[in-house]
Length: 242
Image (cartoon, rainbow, N blue to C red; front, side, top):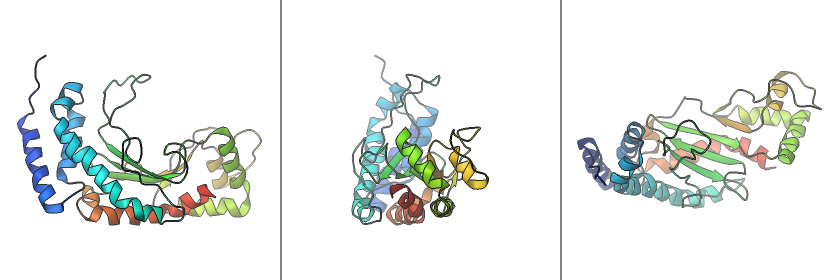
């Protein structure tokens, strides 16, 4: 098999990462975002394997360091959030599931962390922080609503006081996307903001291309920024966890 050698940009990225480690000691650096940029431009298994050292150092390793550093503070919140420093814990894998996708690119050119309140990271209310080549997206909510949980959320939306509390929580820091349904679900009658919420199959408020600057999570300041952002979205997580 022909060996794929890293190009000059990747070698420079590795030097940059070592310099960043000397400055910050742990966590994300400019090289983390350079790796995401390079992966987006070279999304293939050959390129990935040729640059596995970079992946291990400042994608996987950097993320696990940050998550471990957040564990105690996340647990102290109300609701308590789990920060588990392992793949398929608070760090989603870089591999894409391409079985049902026209896009067969094998890797996600992003770094996705989850801090959740419940039994399962993908089926519980949680806080999401996503590094992309261009910046840092974030949001909070509940993606994996099963039919029983979805009915419970919709019933609470119809309650005057409870529904108003959700509207207030949703307005903090991020916004909901477009509704999933064109019509109200069967058995519900409402108008205004509550009618819009009822047409969602998940309750998630997040940035929609309005990402934070990459510098927000670089170096020692990453922990403070992630905690401050999480605390701003706690009203929504608290509503979903009740």
